[in-house]
Length: 320
Ligand code: NAD
Image (cartoon, rainbow, N blue to C red; front, side):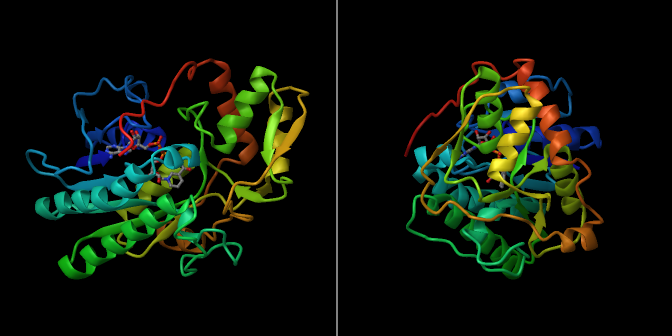
């Protein structure tokens, strides 16, 4: 297949590019490098790979046939989307519209990278796909959550009205190599604090829970979803639920460090619990994660220790 992958210079997108190339497909990444980095794809020397530096909220045109569009472009960490609130809303709305328009014009399949944040601060735990969520549209996180909820609605409208072959992946917290040390997400932040010998910062009392999926499992689930016939949303994440305190303790142990854990005020609308119900992914994709959190964290600590991420800064271009 010839694949268009928006956001392919980011953390998840660059691993997906590797996967689709390994499986024998052609991959064209379209990315504006706002939160991603060219170094994430610099290792790809494959003639079946192409990179286009472009903002997908603008009109999208690509020469030749396209079989599948994977729409992953969007700031994804709270620090990024709160710094770029309007860009986040634009890429979730206009960007999704342009990516769907491209797939429609080419008769291609389409996969939307949605998020567990569509469930907001959930009132049910674990979260199944038929839970509608508890999201504040006007809170600071609304720019990301509502953009993704709009993107899901638009994707379903293109499926229903234009009979398009679409997929919606509800991605839960994923971690691994190529995350930015300074992107503000839980795992890279705690690992890098520990490696620098600084206190680990935990928001609130740390009893809030997170379920962390290792990148190779996530990519495997996303690939299976793209290849499946499932139109309705599918949760892809690891149901192993831990408190943030337990995750901080584990990172302290895996980095051999004895730094203190300090607590800071809980951010507005921070989810208190987060855990995917993955019965559907098991049933329709025959998928479940294989890597435990401890094993994934060990690999990620080793990657950061090698200094692979040193000095990588987000290249924020515009804050429209
Ligand atoms: P990331 O920030 O590393 O990657 C996002 C990429 O999109 C970056 O390379 C960025 O430069 C690009 N981008 C942003 N706006 C763009 C625009 N207007 N035009 C072109 N490119 C643009 O984040 P990630 O963690 O790799 O997330 C990728 C996708 O997966 C996002 O859509 C995110 O919402 C979704 N997701 C990720 C997670 C996770 O745990 N990593 C969880 C849920 C959902």
